[in-house]
Length: 151
Length: 174
View 1 (tube, chains in turn green, red):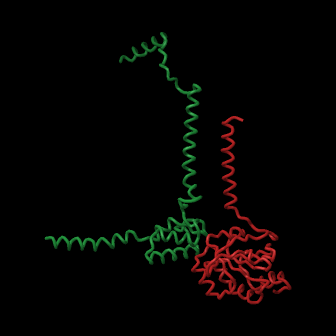
View 2 (cartoon, helix red, strand yellow):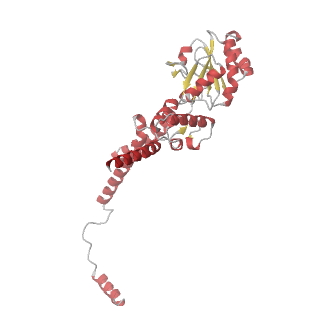
View 3 (cartoon, rainbow over the protein chains, first blue to last red):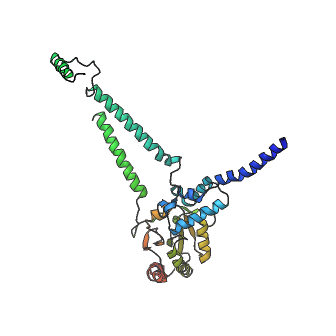
């Protein structure tokens, strides 16, 4: 029984290991969505120029060599510089591409909050006091209206 | 000036500053005849180390931007090699700059055409941008003082090289 379990586990491993390796294998289609054609100024996925074709061949060779997606993108940066990446790297000056929108959003939210607070202090908003009771005339009109609807 | 006005002015200045920065970074310089040419250092296409155009001061240099994937560059390569063999020497040299190209493809190109003149590598296209090129090939004749004397956008051939470049070289021939 125990020997059968060991054989079964070994078979499962033998079947699953190549599948897992294939899942991690870099894909040209996926990389094409993440890198630029530097000459065309578009995603490689959309480019058809001779330079783009050379870039695809370069990527395919690296995939055949078993390189990972990250290694292939690093190799492309060595060849073409940071601009080959569709998304800028999250380090150095390029980090500002991620930080500036977040800071701008926070600054806008802070400005909005300050503006609303000032507006409310200036009496622009609804009063926090108890609402005033209706006048006698309004009370009479309200009673008359309610009576008409026979609720 | 109130605090609110200062904040508003700073905000406007920040936006204008960003726009100017974008223009400076992305804008093309576009060299004119007589302008000093950029001399930033570039890596050698073959071998190691960098080289700057400043090294060529005192000599005439024909700077040729090319790429291996560019068909017109293939067409002009033999003419440039022939011109280098005829005119190259201590007072003149052709200098190739392989731009926005894979280094392996660039080296294959050099071997295929048997190019004997020095080759630099401009992988990210920074030097091509600094020269104000709009594509490849483009060729620039630089005088011994480092100033632009002739610009040929598009491919060169023997007629252009002998008719427009050679007469500008010392004695019509180096």
